[in-house]
Image (cartoon, rainbow, N blue to C red; front, side):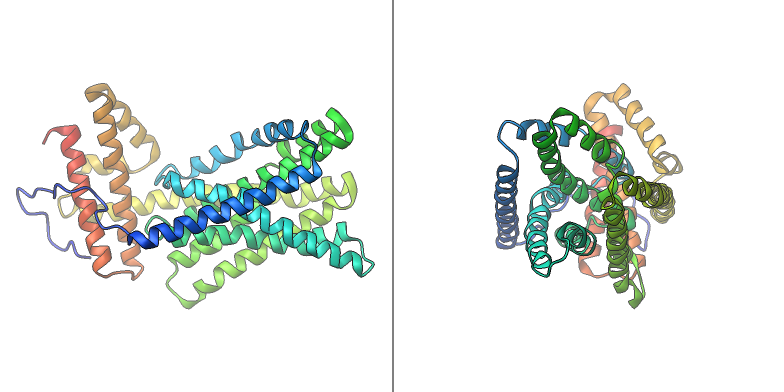
Amino acid sequence: MPMSTPLPSGYRPEAGPRNATRRPFLRRWLVGGALVLAFLLGGAMLAFAVGASVEAQFAPWAVLMAVLPLAVVVPAFLWLDRLEAEPVSSLLVAFGWGALVATAIALFFNTVAAAVIEAFGLDPEFYAAVFVAPVVEESAKGLGILVVWAMRRREFDGVLDGIVYAGIVAAGFAFAENILYLGQALQEDGPEGLALTFVLRGVMSPFAHPLFTSCTGVGIGVAVVGRTPLRFLAPIAGWVLAVLLHGFWNAGSSFGFSGWIGSYLLVQVPVFVAAVCFALWARRREDRLVAENLRFYASHGLFSPADLAMLRDARTRRAALDRARQVGGRQARAAMRDFQDDAVDLACLRARYLRGRSGPEIAHEERELIDSVLRARRAFTGS
């Protein structure tokens, strides 16, 4: 690693802001413009689909009810991401991709596939739901994770990030899908139909789409941190598992309420329990890796033993933020937050280096983070 000797006595960080090097101006605008165009086209297609299937007086109620599950799903994934919070812009891109782009892709291909299946004299509701929709939808949502990874390679550090972005993309997709289902239920069966559909989709299975897509997210995360050629198979394996779970879920739902209950107990509940256990394990593992990598910098004088004790997990970091605010007010708390975030970023950077990703760019980023850590420390300690 570039930092092979202790910090010299009296070292002063550079005065410039962190992340001074930016992506080329033209590239930023091209990528941003492409995303905006994709979101606009997806939003227009979603609006057309809602307008074609749900009368105007029912649509606001469908949107309102579709928002409610987000109050549970999104905070759950953000809680997993407390150690190294992802940029808000990346989370918004992930959610927007799921709600607008992935939904538009699914609407188009599912509709075309249903027409083709019906032309062959088969039941489009069953065959499209079981054999087409899982492939189309998990591919569209998985593409959203890859888009975020391509945009934020420096912040995409492994399996936990893959799970978080997969969950946010899928939450956006489920939100848009719920608008259609809830609106149609209200229009066809009245408030009773709306209530039943909301209970089935918003109360009993709000994590269905996020759970399926998390398999793809884990695969992409493994590919990011892996060291062997086999890591390139991980996203494919994760996507296949997501498609299979999605297909089993849809197959059960196609056999009425009894089939839905069977798939709920045999697919949804076990997968949910397994996913929660895995996510908690991944978060504890990330805490441990951060602590191990920060010890390297502590041996070179950047962190004290007290710093390491404070940075070891989310609970002690929250306590430090509270103390900083009590002592120095909001500015001290903000500086402590910057110190913690930069320290975690530095640990993740070293993890990438240990996985064999070195070069001038990683050395420059390390120096930026070291300087930022020292500036933040000076802001809340005065020294």
